[in-house]
Image 1 (spheres, rainbow, N blue to C red):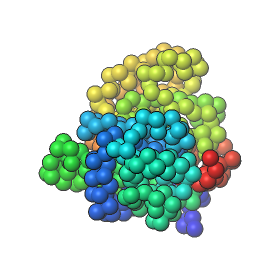
Image 2 (cartoon, rainbow, N blue to C red):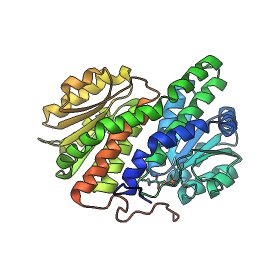
Image 3 (cartoon, helix red, strand yellow):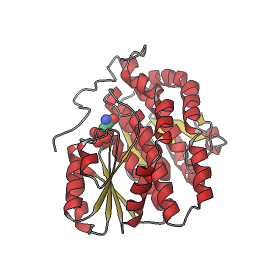
Image 4 (cartoon, protein in one colour):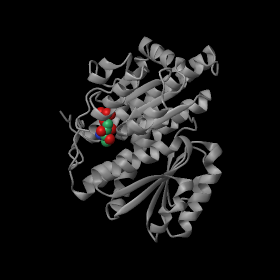
Length: 357
Ligand code: M6R
């Protein structure tokens, strides 16, 4: 039931504070055992499709940054290429909200056949991917009806952040005190997510009028913000049918910038302070070509002054920012679909769960 919301997608966006809270409350023994298994592997491979791949990419970037470990993310339908460089001492993390995506299941089976241990992160207890893994870990997003993943993405990010921190603890990069204080910081997420929704739903509605009139948009970022940019672009194209590309900001001048002309919308996502200066350079390059620049930026960011539109996230905590920064982009995609009069719950040509290779 939609409980008074016009669409499931909007209801599920609004459910995020609660389900993130449930996911945090569920950080238990399955997470400890999953982290132990991942820590014990030589190389950590991470695989998924679509939105879950963006969450996996985030996990890989964060874990490598926190632990110095080799973490290789790959799109599950490409597993045949990645299996060549894997060996039995490696470990695979398979991420799938449904736990039924065939590409991810095939990747899992190929790694198992090689003798690798497999950890899974799913939202469905007893799903085939959770059953076939050596250690199943769960987020607690509840059923997601909208075809577009929203609450399953932010709960995946929450769960994967915790797994990354537990791996860092095992690698001696974080002591018990560090883990405890980070868990406290993570507990602030539900209230912050609520605040972002309250503050920026109206903004998204207004901005959707401008975006709905465009045929194309770029979403650019660097570092830990890149998976969020990729996900923001995926949301816009799948529900609002506006062509959108997520790209590493530095790479944008190696081709994509050719399309930019007056009024072309470019969304910048900023997470890491250490990368802001370079991101500013990319904003200037886009502005010089007449782009309309929108920034999703942390509190206190210096980028604000150079953007045409800014969404200031009420936090500077780099562990929390990616989870908070996708929220306005989900809302923007949703309201752009509504503005165009298309049904965001049932995008054409898409199935909630993809069971053919
Ligand atoms: O159930 P999964 O997480 O394995 O699904 C993978 C993708 O099909 C899925 O994330 C898809 O990209 C989203 N529904 C798009 O919003």
